[in-house]
Length: 129
Image (cartoon, rainbow, N blue to C red; front, side, top):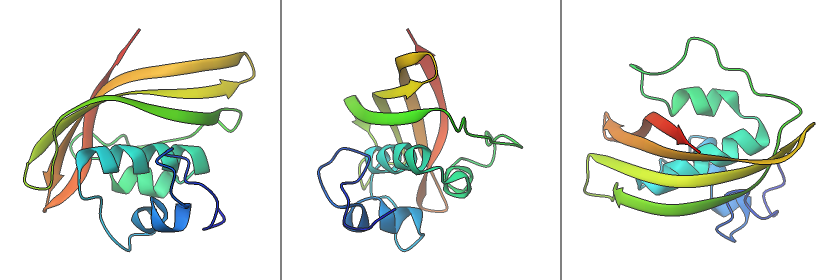
């Protein structure tokens, strides 16, 4: 992805100064919300390696394949609970909007995050209607 393009996470910053360095492993996400945004960006740009790296080892799937026909459109964060720079756990509720062969859709999830070796990782989530 072009480093000067707007980051898919919808924070309004260029990819190269927003989620790009996190996906590249140049720095880690400082909060659970930042990790959530970087993971959304990884889905949007098809970075399976980052998604696996940022997943807690206990809950990480053995295989992860992305749907090549699914295009992620934008992300909305509804709420965060804890997940700050001095917390060990956090929750982020979000809605991710997409388009696929059947039209537009959305995924609403309440995700749990934790620290593994001092770095934020995705633990699991509950998809809600």
